[in-house]
Length: 116
Image (cartoon, rainbow, N blue to C red):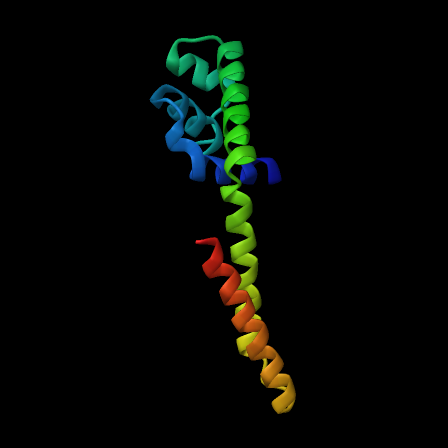
């Protein structure tokens, strides 16, 4: 399941960089959960051809991530936003704790803005 999630996330970020043919087959396999045989029969190509194309697409998408790090940066930003949400929901503690929470929120916000 985690591999499918990773494939979908990489495709969301970099899928437009694949050819139309690659995108179509990749979507059938990952999003439409079609088997290699189903895709091969529908496209009039061999199962091995579908398998090879999917592996090539995976490699292409992973290469883009290795160079651009968009998925990694997205995940880090999402983590910072969750931390900000958690800090804004905290109501316990006195003025010192509130000031520390605000300092942490400002720091996280600055990190997010720097990455844009």
